[in-house]
Amino acid sequence: MMTPQIAIFLVLAAITVAAAVSLIVQRHPIHSALSLIVVMVSLAGMYLLQGAEFVAAVQIIVYAGAIMVLFIFVIMLLNAGEEERANLSRLARFVGVPLALVFLAEMAFWIGRTTSHLGPGPVESVSTRDLSTLLFSEYVFPFELTSFLILIALLGALVLARREESD
Amino acid sequence: MVPTSYYLVLSAILFGLGVVAFIFKRNILTVFMSIELMLNAVNLAFVTFSRSLGQLQGQIFVFFVIVVAAAEAAVGLAIIILIHRNRRTLDVENVDSLKD
Image 1 (cartoon, rainbow over the protein chains, first blue to last red):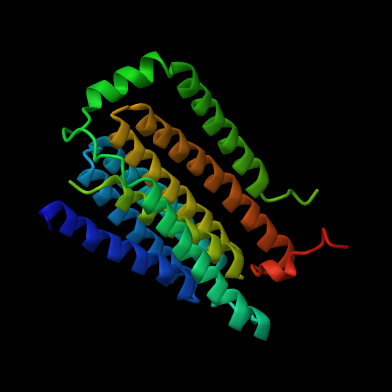
Image 2 (image 1 turned 45 degrees about the vertical axis):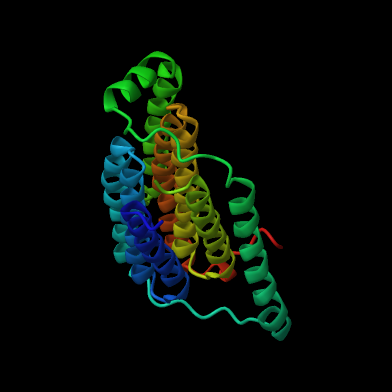
């Protein structure tokens, strides 16, 4: 029962997890940022696979585009170099890391187990028209609030990063 | 079609990797990036449940999460620039004046 969708999902999932591991393993922040971009792009592929086309487009434009460009800009602006490796104590290395891996595997196992009865849902993709109708009718107040939030964040970033006048 | 649980397992794995990166990384920029990774994992779960339950609200919430992430990135990176300007370091081990 290896349908093409499952094959695509497995390939995308492998890329996503590999890039997320690469984010942890890489020492230079710019390599971590590029790994994160790979994660975001392959997640956009998963949204497409689930029929959420508009979310996929927003994911590419806003996340992989705007936010990560901001990150890379700051990394280059601050000329961030390689980080020092965190020194793991012997206890952390031989007890903590395996325990964390076991916990991760167990969490993934039980989430998969307890949600396996959920069906894949309706096949058809979500139309952008339905989405925008819902956004601008029922959720119009939170939508306006987010524009306020963006404005405040803009002002906050300006105030914080402004260079102090030397008078 | 791909079963819902596959996506949820992937979302859990990504979130776990984000937590690991948040704890292990020393560079403040990478710590910040791991927060974005966790937000992405949550977004995947939102979209998956939205499809599985046949409701659009999950995708609406993804938009709000993305907006909040953008605002957070703007303010957080401004704070990081400020820290670098005042302390000349990006290592979280050296930003510990709240301890004293």
